[in-house]
Length: 360
Image (tube, rainbow, N blue to C red; front, top):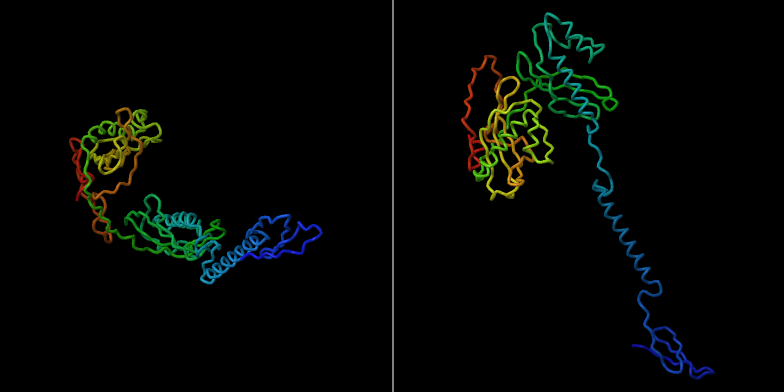
């Protein structure tokens, strides 16, 4: 309830004062409207904002403290784990070079192996590193690094695979020590033969996609011309690819032989009428004279009523290749395998189902 208290009149009886809500206001000849003071007047809102800021800051401190107690501070960067700083690339190459020297020997020229191992053991006591001086063995090509298991920032085990003659593919582990971030490396163990990774069961099931035979027939001439030019990087490539494709070809690494199967998914499987996908199984002839079957996925675009290739990708999964049953690979046979003649199909197979990409 508003309270009004008239003060004693002064010399000018027309002037007085009124007290309202604890505020004294002058009143002239007549009463005037008394303004209500805003809740933000007098700096009170500043105090509210300051109090709210302090409460939020306190809340952040409390939450951050709880996370620190749990080992998950909000603003702490992740700490590197043991071995994260180990130079895996440098150690892998070093171990592969060592494996080539370690696995190559000739009893008629033992000095050759000794000289190669001196690159890794300049002052080694056992200069042949355990070889008894008998037999002849060589590494075909170069050993391949197949992974690294780190122990700390300076020590790790490098897994290496090498093709031996005689012997076939062989896998082994080599311990490598790294210093100066990979600027200096050392072999710290005898190389140990280990089993190579087993084969995983990774069967690719046949799906139920339906194919568009009409679209496949329209694309066949373009795809044939494309693959013929793609293998040798012919100038004709520009006539069958989109200007922004960036496709350059294989530069003579393989020569087109034929198309075995061509599958174009139906429009109901997705995509538009001007952008389609084609899966092609075809054969290349390599400089060795032999032919090899490979599979690609082509992105096709229709421009002015003509189909053009926009991109080409490999690694297309096929049930023809993916093993349905896994296990350890058998030991290599030392006897020559009989030659297998491959029959050429008279023409490409165009199928209206996804089984065109391969069935068991």
